[in-house]
Image 1 (cartoon, one colour):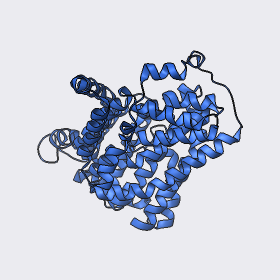
Image 2 (image 1 turned 180 degrees about the vertical axis):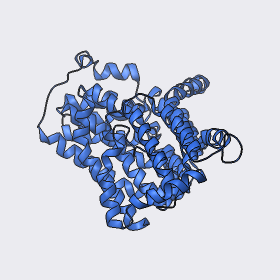
Image 3 (image 1 turned 90 degrees about the vertical axis):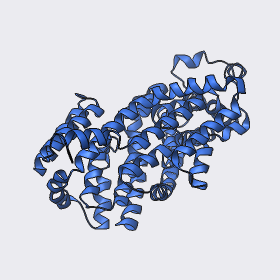
Length: 428
């Protein structure tokens, strides 16, 4: 039966890769089929309806709330001008020095990446940052990749990601935080190396292909239209991080603290109610796709953790899983490309189910699975040509997502290798 379940998973991967089914729908169908193959009854204890669909749908509820709050905070960063001001100040400081401008945009992207992910993060940093980089001579592919690499630097400190791994792998937030702190230096070094190497590879290119660039308003016009946020409001992206990492405050209160700080430092009292509601509703629009995906992931995790599924999969998974530390690093480093193109190791797809199998069957400790999936997530978030942030950044810069993948993949592959080394030699 274990072989049949693996075959069903393969069919699910094929359906997602060929886009026959949206990822969330494919994961739910997979979960139901796996549950029936595992011998689960229709209703009752460890059943399809009551356990897989009912309990699984709400299993990642804390993550969904964190995603919503992160999206809300992201909308506040956009509407209040905080994100735009950060990018403009960095660009003005860098002047006509391409590398300094790119490193500044990288830093702002990292700050934004700690608050929210995916396309909203790319837009917050890239709407001004990408044209500015290209205007001073940074190659178009490098400009798009810089925003993505910067977001990846912030991802280890993205609080909704902490909540997701904590809930999905049944780990304390402190454990997740500890590994993310170890992963951060690899992401930072790789991102800085990307900017320094790629910005010099083909020299300065003073081109900007987008029509919008030809009619860009002057700096003074932009300030009058957008307005600069107060300097103290620019600390907003750091507030949730200080609360969660420095003061050990829980994830949701930390994000709410960031929302409150952004509001108080940028908004007149009589305008607060309208801005609160407007940005909250905007946050719902941004958060809807990932929330739907997390509902499906929770359902899939519930299915693969059923006793029948665990018993069927354990001998097969154990037979092919490397047990020594060196083999663990080598095998899973070679498998990095399988997290691209919505592949089977994409943690926000079938990879979550595989992670659940590894934990449920006891093949690896949950902390080791955390290390593997978090390392893969660094690759997916930057180089996957199907991810929304990669598509948006590439298209806005006037290049293809596959060009961005080719340029960024060696760097994020090295980040994954570093994360896997830390995992293997500290957790196995």
